[in-house]
Length: 279
Ligand code: ADP
Ligand code: MG
Image (cartoon, rainbow, N blue to C red; front, side, top):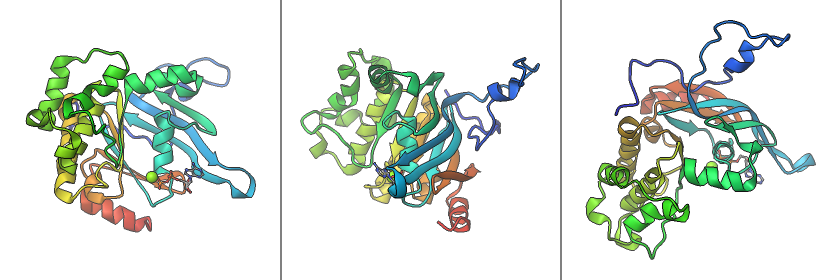
């Protein structure tokens, strides 16, 4: 399966793009004919704002962010330290809540869910990859990969897990514990773990931040293949232009706002954009 077609030039990442439902409804409540079809979003926000603290010490970490992460796309989020990258990712992933605005995963609005429903949604529909690999040291690679499904009481889809493992090139390492694997291999296990339950979206926060450039490019190549061959949707925070160049679209954040966006990035174009934004 190849979910990424280069002929498909629709902008899947919309910056402040009005939503079809809003466009289609007039003040009198009647719907206009033939509204533009909404781009299929795996996850999206509407006017998302997040303020930490209160009064003089408050920090507006997200400021009215409307963004859509297209299904089967690989999106990179860039921006200076403190620009709100992690906050955006955490709020879209239901790990943190907005001060105002809305977040949807598929059709589900997160702040309509109970804590319990949110936990279930995170377990069944979302995958996470962090800078620290967060593997369980006493479990071998295969057990680490299937752990989230074991915890969720879900039976792994064996054929799918096997295809993930072969895509990630770990078949001969399955019985090894994390301490017997290189950093790059450990992160591959972590990415395979995120993929194994076929989540709707995988969120990766600086996944190559702790890796040498060769291991980093292995992980990025694997994430790219997961999008192209397995149809996965990935949202990745990075500050590395080379890492960002593996994505389909790059969003640039400054002071909690999306200030720019680049499609079909190359390292040089990302770098030029960062320079022009003063990052
Ligand atoms: P980035 O990931 O781009 O470095 P963050 O999203 O972590 O940025 O942070 C955005 C802003 O919000 C920063 O000013 C940061 O200090 C602040 N911030 C983040 N998390 C918290 C928190 N839990 N409490 C208070 N301020 C926070
Ligand atoms: Mg961060």
